[in-house]
Image (cartoon, rainbow, N blue to C red; front, side, top):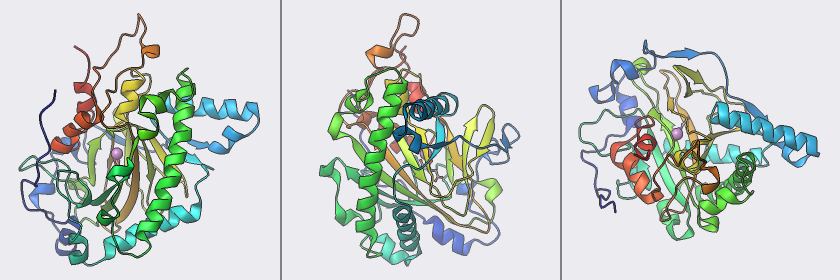
Length: 359
Ligand code: OGA
Ligand code: NI
């Protein structure tokens, strides 16, 4: 039994990166300067010009050939990349634009208004500026807002912004649509893994899955080459749907020793496999490291929607995917226990899921 619990308070006073961005014009505080090997232009890794696969989901509802071809494209993207963009996904473009715009407006509000929602490491809900609670840690150049949709018992409108006035309503609608879309993708992934179509959903707790939103705000940075907007990490949950800024790229995905800068397609969602699907699929699918770089002349907003297992059931490799030549690679753990890693230590590549490996 894991007895570590999240601390109630941050180890140091919180500084909003947005306010640093307004006061620092030609340098950044040391706390944000990454070691050489982690900087965007590190010698060890190269940024290459490529893009992750773009998949048209309308084929899923077309004739059998179109459906088979779409399933195959998703299967390849999961195997090869762990990351892909989807278009014709069924979510209204207007809703996507409204959701992003609502959050842009929220981050433009005066600091005092946003401070009312200041979060703590206990639940992370609200307005935040760091992940992890290690004193003296090097921080990322971003602020964020984190809120829960599901389970319903955790959803609390009082912890969502009251301004702009449309925020709660738009976020509600956005969450409902994305839960549905993730449900459809979970079926596709189950089928592609050779499982019953409701397998992944059931192993995540059926109706009782978790869903939450982190809105990332990356202010302008006078020295973008020295820092990161979000350090390299894999997403701890099941699956992520990212709505990127439509104007400003920044997300980079690891492919071997290279980093690929994602070129967002207008009104696409960027889908990625999280650690929990890696575990259930017994590493048939792998979560992939990604990070965010920042810019000197442009701020950036992104909405990351996380679809997660029910938090208190053990998540381990599916029996169906454990074979004599492929034994269970991971020890089962609840998502509540699992996410303590990232909540305490902040983003650290794929070290969390690696630590789950069976002895
Ligand atoms: C995340 C994430 C990427 C981005 O929130 O987990 O990876 O582009 N965000 O903001
Ligand atoms: Ni991520």
